[in-house]
Image (tube, rainbow, N blue to C red; front, side, top):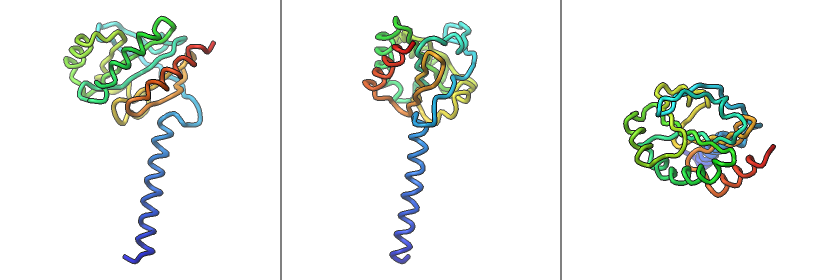
Length: 173
């Protein structure tokens, strides 16, 4: 391969990498604007039936996770602390276990860690599909009081920045 062809191949690879990074950034919340929270029903671990419309008027964090995901397990204490800090101010957390996660493992995890927020098992994958692609865990969505998705995190969020955004959203009328 000549030097100019090698440079061309490297440049093409760089463009492809940049395009992929741009897609990830767009998925991370840099899109054209907020999208509406999907209107879906779900069943909590304790058997209660709920619907996303019941979350309207609150700031909501929806976290897609799995017990087999070390990043998910690692961020769980921060999710708990964040929930505890803001729940009295109109903040809610919904932890959605992925369809490949064994229900018994999810129930054991939630019980042993005494998770103080809503936990649901997405046993058909319908909840993840309704939020769009959930390409990896953890994937987290932050929703404002009007039901608009304002931020999507792929991987663990920066919890300092997340808490600042939660405070801003809670202050909105």
